[in-house]
Image (tube, rainbow, N blue to C red; front, side, top):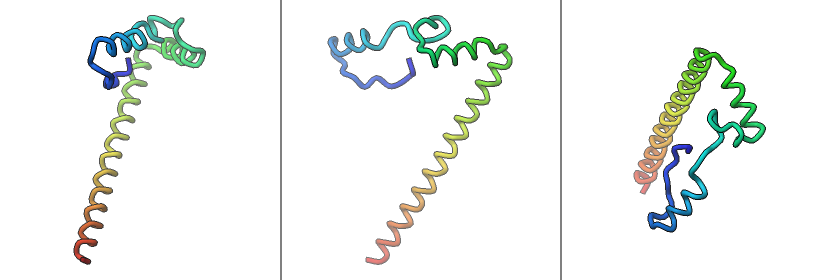
Length: 94
């Protein structure tokens, strides 16, 4: 699973339908036969990496994701400040 929030119904029918359609074996190291060609090629590349190299790759990707999240938060703060300044300017002009 992609660790996504479940947003479906909570009754038995909805949960049963979700389980049948979404749960079970997925493409990955334990089930490479479930992968399409592109995913299998990517998986094979990761599986061929030495453990230390794979660990560094994962750490680098996690750092990239953390930086992107931080940059997004800063952008949001800047946009919020601009919005509030615009509101104040509008209110002062009334």
